[in-house]
Image 1: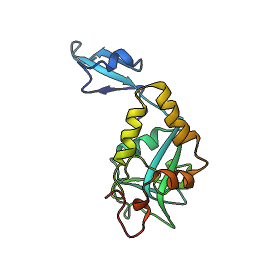
Image 2 (image 1 turned 30 degrees about the vertical axis):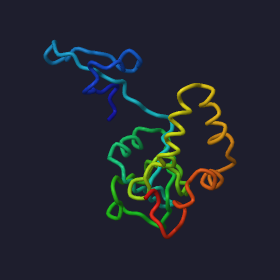
Image 3 (image 1 turned 30 degrees about the horizontal axis):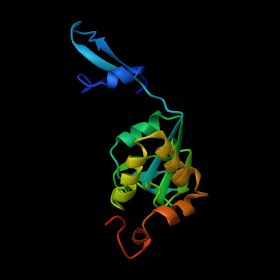
Length: 178
């Protein structure tokens, strides 16, 4: 939006203000009394967005909310991974949010690229893998082991899919995640 900060609703009474230095309480400049949480506007260097469909020019169809479009617009660079790549995609053909190519720097084909999370309309979250992740995140040593296995110990995307995406999801005759 081109502003240095934005008001944020719903943070009073939480401990987030103790943990974040990019949010503060400010007095409403119009009435001089009302306290409002304001957050520093974010301008990410890079956004990585996973989508259902994209074309080689960078037009993207995401089944997510419009916030993903705002993220793409705010970021200096945008990388999109997509379940499928088509020759051409128009806003009229898009299902869900549409990100025009002007905001996208790179598109990569990455089936199951949202795993272990889900991809709206294509597959649900992998509950078993998510459970493993949550358990591993409880202490540094376990999480380091998780990262070595699932991130650093994987040669490329194809190996990740082969090792960690459930086999039944990869069968073309079944709906993934069902």
